[in-house]
Length: 254
Image (cartoon, rainbow, N blue to C red; front, side, top):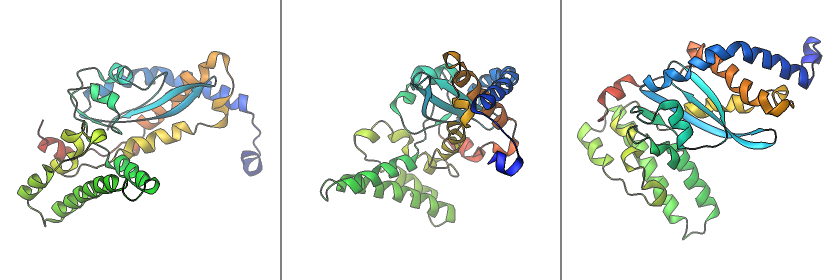
């Protein structure tokens, strides 16, 4: 496309070396970005699979109102998240509900309902009529919660009615660890019931240009340069920062 449209000729290794040089220039700035995250009242987190030298790795994004940080890590776990945010992080940590992130016990963990509704939808498609009753019931409960949120926003539901409805949380197994956080969007009006902020942010980095997969000694390019450039680029673009529901945070029962 570049050659046909602009007369530019390139190779995988050439693009890889160009990005490596750019990553080296961005490194000093990127090294300072993670220190800003623990002071943020809200951090969105998501990750996806990655490969370094054909070995499975984890590509993670953490972003706040001010900064965006991409990391490539060998594992997806509590230790990796705590190394960035600190074990005593006490803000809102928005993620997909993975058990490992609940190790940050002082943080509040608003549930991403989109993940749960999608999981229920997939289970319903594959299950028999009898087995589908449970995911259908869970999906109906979650959607009723979203409807309550909309009614409250429209003024057709009082604050007392919202508080009564929020207490009806009966979910099994996968949901048992999330009851305090599942209906955060009801207790904090204006809060989004999804983690799409981090999901949209991690997706571009996971689709790195072809040159980024070029073979480098010991996989150093993929580990060092892929997180650096997107982290600087996202953090320096004001319009790319997520919108923070300030009023919701002020009203949240901590």
